[in-house]
Length: 278
Image (cartoon, rainbow, N blue to C red; front, side, top):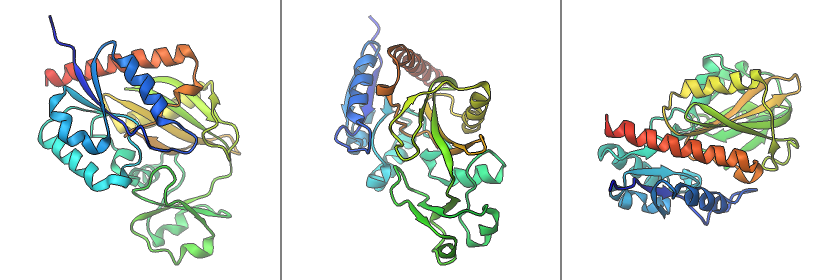
């Protein structure tokens, strides 16, 4: 009898996220994945000590790593040194590596909210009533502030990003397993980010989101493309989440949830097979 693959499922069930219940999502997902895998749940601070005992580590709703940055960096270093299989793979170029990618995408001309990190580049930002200032290592809106143009000159640059505050119609998120689109959700009220409704993307919407999935070059894993719809009707990237994207499964249909679980299960099997034959 062939042994079932084993997964160390990393989650912080007690983390209090605004407008979301991480624990509910991870209880549902881990329960469904048990049909194909032997699974043990652990807190992110315990992952490094336990990961050698499993075929792979699955990082899910583990909360913003800036709350335990030193331990997370040690986990990454040890996983690479010990050739531990981590899903999502640690090669992600987006939020997994900090917010630097927003600068890179701006420079490369991608449809992203214009972003700078140096005072001498302020001229590159469009005029706005207010500007968004956030830390490069930020997450979950931690450390985010809105300032006037006059205040930008006195900021201490280096570890912060500056963007114009966009007057947008709504935010929309596109969810992917590997490079396959699963579903989309949007927040019709800009002031209520996590009050979500199903969204039917156009072909142009999917071309937009797919550009960022292609840019990230992750062969396996879960990604969420967050965007805003401007008053002019364009989409601009807000964030490309490739570390532990919340999936908002409570807002999708049973069919969409079943399809995502099936896609994630198949992705994990491919991930383990690819690593076994590497």
